[in-house]
Image (cartoon, rainbow, N blue to C red; front, side, top):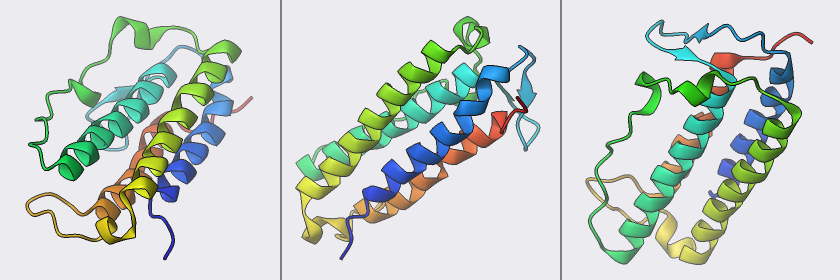
Length: 150
């Protein structure tokens, strides 16, 4: 059976493929498809990383038999001053380093948990496989900025 954590690494690569176009960002915010939030390249990178961190912490707690931490992120509702910065080649390089390491760490943690843990019921939480499948949605954040014309 294939390691479900691999899909997280694949989702990160999809996000980074879209992010390559963000060097053309003109500084104007982009409205999310639901019309409730605005996005910038930095905000999308932040949310992708935060989402992986959140679920990595959840996986660790589940495997340790500990309570998960409540979600108290400001998440997508908040746009920070730093989110408005120009998105440069260096920012893209840093995003690649940060997000690839997070995606790989997540996949390696799922590998280390072992196949017997992937589908073990963890009610009221998701199984590890379901968490991995949920994280394929990371690309949604990148899609809110979209592929920008060069």
